[in-house]
Amino acid sequence: MSKNAKRIAVIDYGAGNIGSVVNALVKLGYRPTVTDSVSVILKADAVFLPGVGAAADTMKSLSAAGMDAAVRKLVECKKPLFAVCVGLQVLLTATEEGGNHKCLGIIPGKVRKLPTGLKIPHMGWNQVKQVYTHPIFTGIPDNTNFYFVHSYYAQPQDRSVVAGITEYGIEFCSMIIKDNLFATQYHPEKSGEPGLTMYSNFLKYALS
Amino acid sequence: MVKGTSFTNLRDAGDPVEQAAFYYREGADELVFLDIGATPEARNTMVNVVEKVARQVFVPLCVGGGLRTIDDMRRMLQAGADKVSINTAAVQNPGLLREGAAIFGRQCMVLAVDARRSDNENAAGWEVCTHGGRKPTGINVLKWIEEAVGLGAGEILLTSWDADGHRAGYDNELNRAVSELVAVPVIASGGAGTLEHLYQALAFGRADAVLAASIFHYREYSIRQTKEYLAAKGIPVRLQ
Image: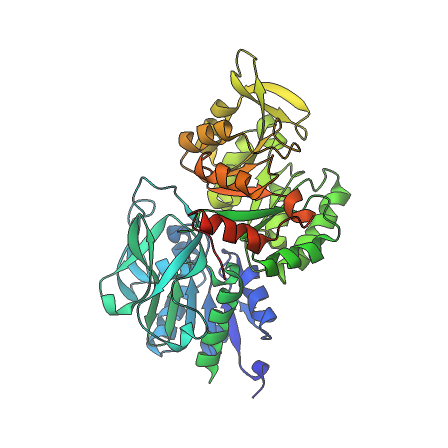
């Protein structure tokens, strides 16, 4: 089957740098649809949830667009979903950012501020330790560097969802996998060839 | 943790789209486009370049050197830049930093500072220069950077105009003074002539990253060679 017979949706909720995610998918030979339509998203074969900025603002934008319910539904029916950066953070129960804000609650746990002492935001390349083997890591050596820009990190209660670990002052969860939900604190679309490989692996896995 | 980011400044670098793709393939960790020119035509040209580069380069892109307004910044970010760098415009209107950080996030806001050693009483140590390093302002570099970080600058691109172009090493007293002053990343620029200079800026200047233009532009060293050199000196770098 050709790469374009499948529907790939990139959620546009009026925030986040969706352009670079789209550029990466186009480079891989796919033709993603950028959309703010809940029905298009629910009909897609694979969905991307990009994110840049503050988690509380992102939650507000998602709710305003009716996307909070859509994302919950995607996860419920185990639709392949890839969430990036703040897209990962909003999956948890709540975030400390800007006080205490409720998030989607799909992954039980909290989003906490990185400890002081190191430069914040944590901005730059850092290694991701793979907790176990998974097709998403095919062709990506353990401890490969990916690009990070964040001041907060996710702390899931259930450690079994933690697929990647990174050290920056503390060891934190830099990747979550739960069934067909994949989420990275880092930006694969800004992480050079290993990042493109990860998106490619996700789509091969999701669309097979 | 990787600290030694290799930046590539695409000033005067032939076809910028081709150059960017070349440096990306070579393993640059981030690309910085500077001196894009202050005219509307120059900015339009740059928007096209950024759009083309963003389709084939998958590392962070920073653009600066002629941006005056929030609108200028927005156009570059929409075209595919991840960060914008402002210099003279921020000195003239520091509120731009606060406004830009509120709209785009502080991780997008790079403050470029051109510093020159000075005996000026108010600017003891180093003085801020604007207009491409030509115009001394009488403003103290350390005070300005502290204020700018308070307003919303998320990263400092620090160029020594005493060292720039001399290829005799960075001003590491300056780099160190700034790195120890603020809690945001500092990129050292100006003066690289050898790989040892890059190492010194990271190790003694305590810079979080180094920018080098001419040593890469004239192909004296490749990015891979540079990273291998730094890795051998114990600096964590990204080799892929």
